[in-house]
Amino acid sequence: MNNTCSTKIMKIQELKQEIKEELNSILSYWMGHTVDQTNGGFIGRIDHDNTLYPLAPKGSVLNARILWAFSAAFLTTGNKQYLVMAKRAYRYIDQYFIDKEFGGVYWSVNYKGEPLDTKKQVYAIAFVLYAFCEYYKATADIQARNKAIELYQLIQQHSYDPVKGGYFEAFSENWQLLEDLRLSTKDANEKKTMNTHLHILEAYTNLYRIWPFPDLVMYQKKLIHHFLKDIIHPDTGHLQLFFDENWQVKGNTVSYGHDIEASWLLPEAATILNDEELIVACNAIAVCMTEATMEGIDTDGGLWYEKDPVQQHLVKEKHSWPQAEALVGFINAWQITGNKEYLLSAYKTWQFIQAHIIDKKKGEWFWGVYADYNIMHQEDKVGIWKCPYHNTRACLELLRRLK
Image (cartoon, rainbow, N blue to C red; front, side, top):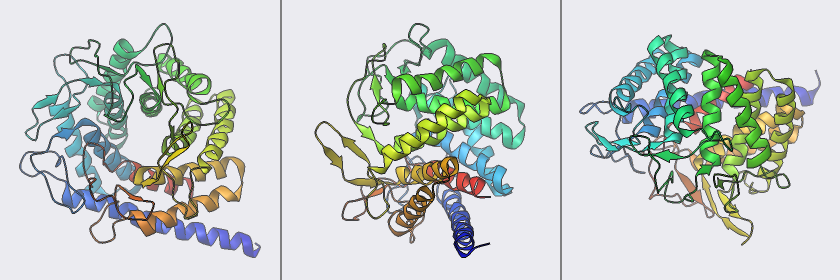
C-alpha cells in the first residue's frame, strides 16, 4: 500500500472517530437539556444560552425529528438510552400530535399538549411518517408501522395532485384548502414547493424499507421524475423552490443547503427502489447538483445560505444545517465518482463545523454564523426548526458510508 493511500485511510479513520464522538455529544445534549419532566415530551424552546422556555409551544417537526434521531441512533449504536428517548418521543407524538378526529398531524401544540395550530402541513406529516418508520425499525412495534401507512394514505388521499402530479402544501384541520400555504414566513405562498416534495421523497424511501407496496413504488418513481423534470433546473443544476399547481416556477432563490441535501437523497431513493435506470440518472444529477453547490462554498470550507441569482445577492450567513448536508453530499459525490476533491471538500466542511458551528462550551450546534464569524445569538438551540436531525443524520450517514 502506497503512502498516499495509507494517509487517506488514516484520515478517514480519524474523521470517523471525530464524527462518532460528535454524534454522542449531540445526543447527550438532547438527553440532558430537552426532556420536559413537568408536562411530558420535550421542551419546546431553548435559546442560544441554554435558557429553557417551558411554556413554549411544541412543534410536530421538532418532535418527529427527535423521534427519528434517537431511533436511528439506537439502530446504529445499540445504546439503550437512545431507545428510551425514542419511546418517549413516540408516545408523545401519538398522544398529542396525531389528530384522532380528522387524521394527520397538528402543526403545533401548547406546552400542555393541547392543539395550538391545527393546520395540516404536509411537510410535517411527512416527517412524522419518516420518524414512525424509523421507530418501527428500532422496535418492531407494529402499531408504529400501521400509523406510518395511515399517514401515507392520508397524504395520497388529500395532498396528491391527480392532474399535474406532485403534492399540495397545506390544508385546514379537516382537510380543506387554505389561503396561506406557507411552511414559514420566509417562504412564498405557492401550492407546491421543492421542500415538501423533498421530504415526502425521504419519508417514502423510509416507508419502502418496511412496506414495499406496489402503489408506493409507483408514486415514489413519479416523485423522482418530478425532481428530474420539474424541480431541478436543467441548466444550472440548482433546485427551483416554488411552483404553482401547473409546475410553473415562482421565484429564483438558490438554496445551497437544499441543493446538496437533494443530491444524496435522490440516489438513495432510486437505490432503495432497485431501479437501475433511475439510479444512473440520479447519480448523474447528484454530481451536477454537487458541482452547483460548490459555487456556494467559501474558502474556509463553509457553505453560504442562499443566493438570488437575478440580483446577484448572496446571503452571507452560514447556517448549521447546510454544513451537515454538505458533509453527506460531498461524501456521496466522492463515492459515485471516485474524485478525491469531493472527499477533500467534506474534510474542509468538517473543519469549518468544528471551528465555527459546534458550541464547545454549552453543547449542540449554533444556528449559524455571519460572514465575520459572529454567532447568530438571536436564534435558538432548540425550537420549532432547530432539531437533532441534520447534524445527527450527517453523523450517522458518514459512519455508515465510511465503513
